[in-house]
Image 1 (cartoon, one colour):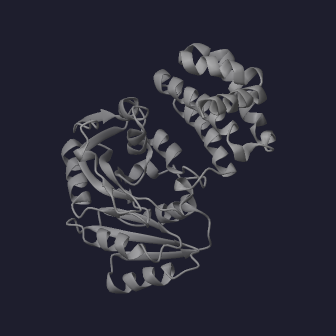
Image 2 (cartoon, rainbow, N blue to C red):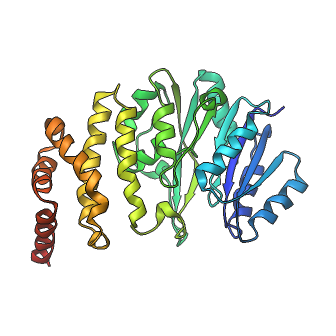
Image 3 (cartoon, rainbow, N blue to C red):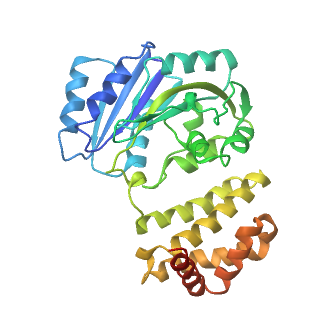
Length: 327
């Protein structure tokens, strides 16, 4: 019996995968099953998974056709349902973790009785530079037990770093029953909705003021790449997030404001010119929000939103003109 199931979706990361797997196997906490889900890799990732499984009986490997990160994680969730674990964690295969991560987080869960443990995360740039929030006096993350909604109220919109802290799946340990009916979906920002659904008013969250997870910049990753039309899916996701957070007026208000800001930002992107029809549904939703929730928007956003709602084309022209003047 293993208390913890660690699920790692794997896709074409043969150069980085050993670092990830070695960091998990080096945990001071030993009572875990490592589930590797090879999501149709076309490089040597699948063979690497099998090689590690031959050397360590704690490792299970699933080989499947490519379906994306959500599909791979869900395969892992289905497998762990058959195991005796009572905890679940996720690691992305191009990242790595500190040896004390799971021992510390599980101990904190046991002491607090919380449903979710959350730790800080460090950012490893492609040039090797590391941002560690423990050395940033602007980051405040006291160790405490909060309800899920209070946790989101405190961290979801307070800073770009804290947004990742709140919605990422990989810097957390979850109690198994939280995933009895929930599954990941989508190919972009797949963590977002699962976390806003899990962090309910009744879920207890234990914060840990240590950076144990190393998120590694990867130019090949969809979430770290230059803007593409596919990222318009983020707008739909944000509307869904607002619906998930209806019981928290402040969070819902911030979410709708974010939708408005991103809709305007995306529309003026050069690569969107000629693809305006992609925005038809979002502009309709934008105008509805402006009509019903105008008071919830900041004064600056409200002024820009009125121009955009009147004519997105005029808004794009004015933004372009302002940029020319600044040059």
